[in-house]
Length: 403
Ligand code: DOR
Ligand code: ZN
Ligand code: ZN
Image 1: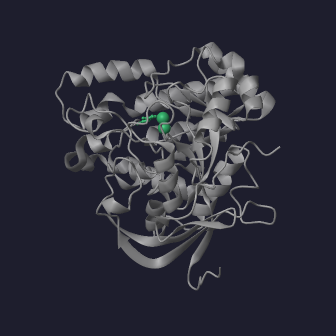
Image 2: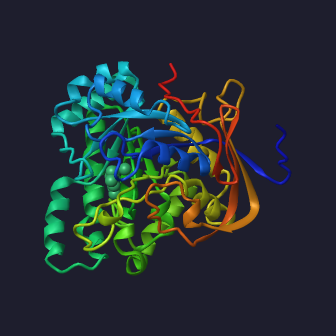
């Protein structure tokens, strides 16, 4: 077919290195079919799926099982993470052979209750990262500090904004300094995911300046929401690390423009309605976001908050490089996979509940007016979504590292 693209922007298909599609084991929250349809509708052509499912992806066998389970349900291409805990750190080689593109380490409490690794295990994973050249994605919040502050602020009642105090920037910056110090000893490459605070950014900057191979991701919700929004949205925007004050969002925007931030991921983390309402302390953390990832970033760009030329770098090339999918993914170039997004920068529209492909449409962005519409999502040369509507069969496949 011929696509009439006068006045449009053509970008490489987005590589979202941070999604929790919830399959297997947590499909009451959402599943791979809904999640990858949402991805396609929003211009994401490759997702890198997090390993905190039930069971967690912590052995070669579970990598193979998960890949087998997801094949045939994928509307976009997908790659898999393995998870590192004290019991799986000895299985890094086998998980690499099974086809993971990288590993995730949870230093703080999270969905799936994966215990934080001992410091020795962190040394081992970074030594392996150095040896084999993979990236380790870190959820950087020091568990012990989170527990301490949560107990302290929980005693003060149940205002949603207390969630921010219960997981302060200190917990984030402290974890980043632990990671960076270990890298100074052991080497390796880290990606600090969902950087949410000024203090965390400063910690990343310090280690980058010292030549440590540390990269940073932030997510749209830290750029477009702020603590003022707790009153309106309540537990819907409870996420770890938390949404913080305006000054943090502004610092993160500067980081996006200066190159201090390397990638933008969605941290698509859906939950069921009964988990996202009621008391702030018992509500689950995380919100769906893969469908609005590119739309929110385009809106920021077209309103002049970020340079539109940063989008293909932060949302395609850089994540593809970090997870060894480049240049097949993340680039418009000869020999690449032919994943493209066509955007109309002139169009403005309102995000409607019925247009979201999530199982539970618990997005704070419903009703938001956005600039720049994703018109076509093209996966390996095939149109998979048109004007936000997914079409055709699930033609996505499992992708392993480019060697
Ligand atoms: O809010 C969050 N939810 N943060 C995470 O790091 C994990 C995620 C989840 O899996 O629910
Ligand atoms: Zn996380
Ligand atoms: Zn996450």
